[in-house]
Image (cartoon, rainbow, N blue to C red):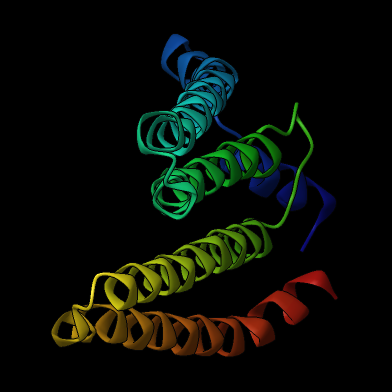
Amino acid sequence: MKPDDTVAHARLHELPRGPVNRLISTLPRVFVPAFALLFFAFSICFAVAAVVEFALPILENGDFLQGLIKGLHTGVVALAVYELAEIVHEEYDHEGRTQNALARIRRGVARFGAVVIVALVLESLIMVIKYSQENLAGFLYYPAAIIVSAALLLTALGVFAKLTSVPVRAASE
């Protein structure tokens, strides 16, 4: 290849800076912080609701365990939504820094998958405690199904990590 061919080839891959391309490059600067802030606000709302749901049964009936179970339900959701806000902020807000898209997606999927798996396991644990206290042993197949789905999700996350590890290593070298 001649030097002139290299310059011409590089120009072919440059995007023209028209109004549509400027809009496309500007939208993430607006939407990423907006979505991160939205998810963060939702996580605060869920956290406040978790505290209320924890305190209400204690104040009404003096039932600490019922308050703990109800508060944990909403607290787990608050944690998952907060983690989603953090992932959106950290993984998509780059301020012009170039990053490997596959590595970014891999990291985001792994973090969010881990949060979902923990939330599912905690939810099943809460259900086991609730059903055992209310003598509803016949309903224990619900938490068992949740644990099985968390195990399948963990397996799928491991397969995803294994299948994407080679392309990420090759792209970083």
